[in-house]
Length: 189
Image (tube, rainbow, N blue to C red; front, side):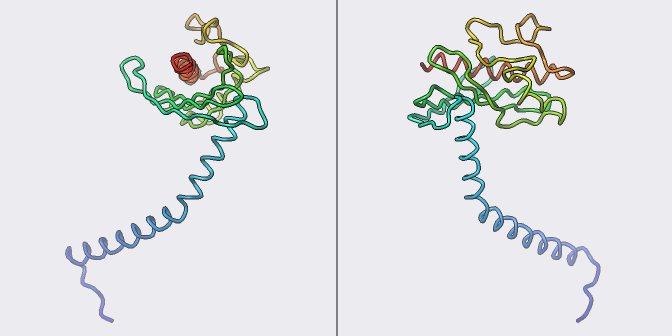
């Protein structure tokens, strides 16, 4: 077989061929894994709802996606009504690394039963602590609080919650997401 001449036309043809093969491979892998990824996301959400509502078994009776204007930005929320309370998925776009998404569980009166961080792009080791820092028994505990009665902002900003050490931006973002989850809960009671 004769070696291809190194000219612009041949280089473009080879690059296009490689791109088509790689694109086809990526598309087939995406197609093959799509159902497994969706199933894992559903399991993560189901487990998250159980965690935030502090229950072994939870029956979701209604799922309501909605959008609200928060400080001039349209933010998306999902309200899960269950037999054990209400869970609200909320995202704050102003974390240190970008979006910070939480799932917060409320009882009928608005008291926080629990929370879990569903997604974040925060700094590993610092901002990633939001999943634990605000849990029961930790310095910034929000579990058991009612956002209507407590100021869910960091103490440095005049609030009632201790920020994660060396991670104030993440703490602010997390607490805004929780507060907006509560506001969504309250508006949709």
